[in-house]
Each structure stands twice: as structure tokens, then as C-alpha cells.
Length: 142
Image (tube, rainbow, N blue to C red; front, side, top):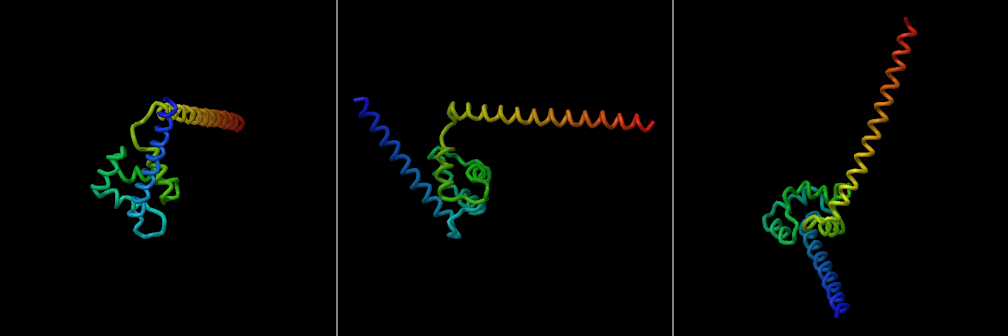
């Protein structure tokens, strides 16, 4: 019975993923007014400002507060969204944050903070050493 339940859950998850992909591709096609296979920021903001689209996305657990921020979160850095970026990005962002998401963020933040602290320490040490050299040079001039 348990194995049957697991198979049923897996089929449902696959069906949900397929349905999500289909919906996001439909949204992509509607947003890609130029038909070039990419959504730029202006195309994205324009479609996200349609109240029905916002409501539709909110019903899928992705409330859109600020289209520009959402675009930044979905984009891979090239200032254009592909259908794949939209599908995977929305799938990643929708729903509530999970414990693993928060734990991952905290770990990344700690790593980043540690690197920044090391960099600042190095720069402070470099400045202190330069200051000592300057003081020694000033003493030599006397």
C-alpha cells in the first residue's frame, strides 16, 4: 500500500510539474510581444502590470509585489528571460520559504560575511603597513 501511495505521489508531482511548465510557457508566449524568444524587462513589466496576470500568479503561490524585483530574481544576468528561466525561476520562487531555503541562505550569508571580513582585515593591515612606511620615510627626511 505504501509503495502504491509513493507512486501516486510521484505521478502527481510529475503532473504538477508538467502543468506548471505549460502555464509558464503560455505566459512567456503572451509576454514575448516581439516574438524573438526572449522577454526583456519592459515586456515583463508590461505583462506583470495586468491585474489578471498578477492574480493568476498569486493563485499559483507567486504574489508579484514589484515586477522589476521579480525580473531580477528570474534573470540569469543577461537582461533577458528565456522560457526556461521563467519556468525554473517561478518554480523555485513560488510558495513559502522552507527551512532548507532559510538554512541555505544563512550558510551563504555567513560565507559571504566571512569573505568580506577577511578582505577588510587585509585592507586594514595593508593601510597600517603603508602608514608605518610613510612614517618611516618621514623620519628619514628629518
